[in-house]
Image (tube, rainbow, N blue to C red; front, side):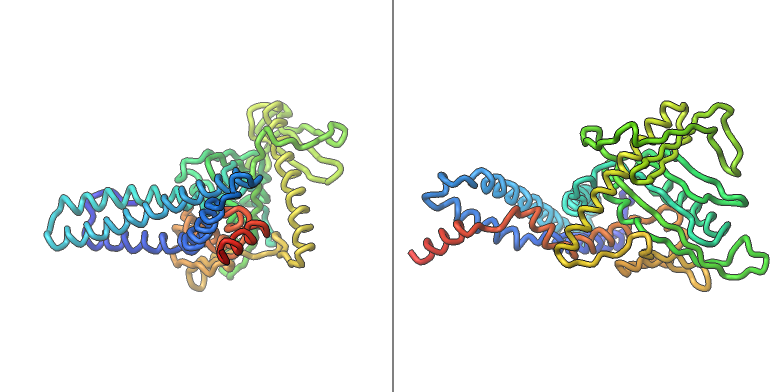
Length: 399
């Protein structure tokens, strides 16, 4: 958000923008459904036999959580409506002091709205975790490798704006330019929750700077993102299942940057997962980081297996993540970045490549929340009424 001293037109634009965000948020967590559920629980708790029910503690907890969620939502709406009224009064009276108050109120409201969006949109089990992000060049040689380096810069710039810490833990430079792959750890609150929106294949269309004929080229790079797993989560890794190798670390151009063997490569023999770490200061630190990444990848592997099993039981067909082209960045013959999952697009390609990916992330999170609305509601509302509870309500209604 901008600083203070806006013009009235800028305030009006900001009010409209926040109104859109409130509307999006309403569509995701559905306050009307929360109120209906709260009313159902109130009816149950008013029954004489309720206090002998084994589910009373769970229902009372759910009631308190629903009441708190609705209270926060209603407070957001009230603040927005108050700012709208104050803005209209300030315009009618030409009162600059009131305009300044509206600006300060908008700044505070945006912070509160952002916190509520995180509660609703980033409520997954590992969304609050750090992120381990890997970019691999697709077919296309130097052109694709240069695209990897462009994406690395994009994510680094995005993370810096968020105040996140970025550590490149492994990379392999291309022969002429760019990178064949790069792995980085992005540390900060909800880094994974945001960056999970970036998983998939990213497509670049441009006039190649490496083609003397000036022809248009299409390049691909795949992005994988997994959460960094907390230490208290136990992942069984047997020493005999690991092959650990040491080597000299390499920099851009493939040259060795250390004379001692500080880089570490760990192969998990049962799964074939290979993790290399070379950018820490010592072999010990590189080994510790490689083990941390291996742990995260093994956890992600098990999570995917479980999801696939659930999908098979439910008769669902999931897309293959690596083969799913999620976004196109077109620099020629026109300029456009378009997300194929959400339809969100912008012509400001430079801003996107400079780290301005928040609108794409937000559009993805909103679309996922809408698509999984029933699952999200189940998390928020706990489980539906039991048969015993419904029977009690029906008996009460007949009485």
